[in-house]
Length: 147
Image (cartoon, rainbow, N blue to C red; front, side):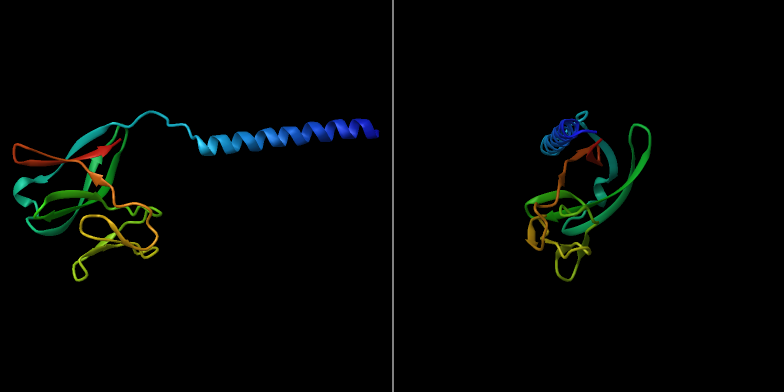
């Protein structure tokens, strides 16, 4: 291989690598959205079992298109109403726990803390807990999940 052929191959390889790097950055910044997820409501509990004050953890299962999934939600009841929260920390996706003594949600992984309204009070979480839609029909409570 002479000097000219070496430089031609080197320049082609350099620009191919540069093109791959630019494409990777573009796909990272603008990821494909895939198909949009719709909200489906699943039975959670009877209306009589709703907490009147404080926070209650509820584990339940729901069926997606091709599988059954387990999930956990927290219902927070106060004078301003009832709010349903996802039990997933917004930092790295760990499951949070409700501490009855401190009256706050705690993430065991990295020390994230949320108040009873789901707002961040300390730690690394970048956003409040995800609120989930609730619907009450005919004495039954349904929770909305994006699937």
